Amino acid sequence: MVIFLQISPLLLKKDETRLALFGLGAVRDERLHRMFLQDKVKFLTLADKTAACREWFNMFVLHQNRAKHGQTNYIPEKMLPDFFDLVIWDPTPSAENEFFVMQPGSSVATALSEGEAGDKFVAILKIKGKDFKVEKLKLKTVRQFYFQRLTMSETKITPNRSDT
Image 1 (tube, rainbow, N blue to C red):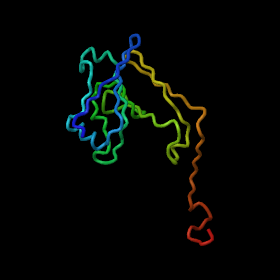
Image 2 (image 1 turned 60 degrees about the horizontal axis):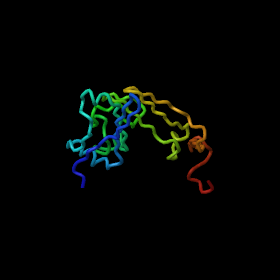
Image 3 (image 1 turned 135 degrees about the horizontal axis):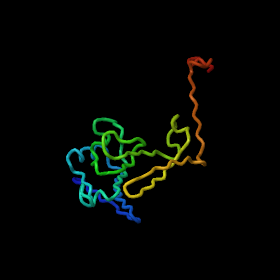
Image 4 (image 1 turned 180 degrees about the vertical axis):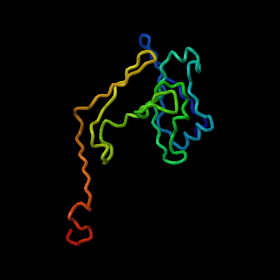
């Protein structure tokens, strides 16, 4: 039984760029939600909110539900500390926090749905100092997936006929 979760960053440095990379694998959403509410999730930082911490680009990569699937079946952005510069989660800027949120999705079709039929992309993340840039690259060799809707009312097929 986990009573306390402490997340330490992997520290990477190249030239003047310093990256503090925090990561969290899948934890049952209900359990993690409760742990955040009970203040049982701690992020080890160099020196919270001091100049030393601000010199580092703080990135958090997590594998949890962001969309609400029930009262506690997700982790809302407001539960995450605001010292992060980037959270890998969704492709739109966060309205609730000071960090940018990104949720890249999959580079291959993972479900039989219309949204999977389009082009697939990957992203290259470039970090320099405290600035970052995401470069979107369209994949050229992706297994093709075609999706077409069939509306029975628009056909001459009668669904309840025995010879159909």
